[in-house]
Image (cartoon, rainbow, N blue to C red; front, top):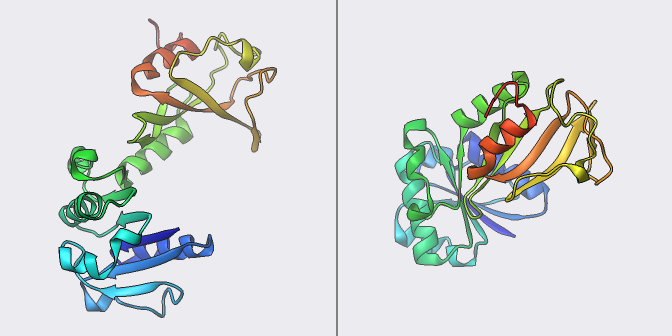
Amino acid sequence: MRVAIAGAGAVGRSIASELIDNGHEVLLIDKNPASIKPERVPAAEWLLADSCELSSLEEARLQHCDVVIAATGDDKANLVTSLLAKTEFGVPRTVGRVNHPDNEWLFTEAWGVDVNVSTPRIMSALVEEAVSVGDLVRLFTFRKGNANLVEMTLPDDSPYVGQPTGLIPWPENCALVTILRDSQVYPPSADQPLEAGDELLFVAGAEVEDTLERMLAPSTHPA
């Protein structure tokens, strides 16, 4: 897979290194000469250019990229890069970094962003995930499918403690992905019973999140 990353700062370089380690081709783009440091990620291609300029993206041959990641520290630049990548070059997948939480609402398909990554939201979700029992925590949003990755730590008084997952009437547009228990990952087989304290990961539509929360933790979230 060929990936172009706009923004060759610490974030962009870290993403590039990870992708290269996983066997992908990576192009790093930055308009600041001080950020062009090929020795930091020697296996990547480097381009000194402004990702908000159409001519720069033509030079980068964006039409041959499978993914474009807009990872600069400027939300406006990330939006423009994503929009140009999607509309002018037909890039199949775009990922936009959100630096300021007030701008998150802009990072949608209307601006060419398939997936937005908001650092403040991720950090707050991880805090909630670590301390919340009986509350559904949204970890990630899949823009293409209008679904979310959500997590709940099953409370002791859940009516489904001890129930095999195959007998639980899960809401429509909701799938149990895995069960985390005692540092182990358990696939949600039909005969696998739930236990108090299980961390349950779901992919679910936003419209069923409240139903799922009330169903698994009715004492905390009465109907």
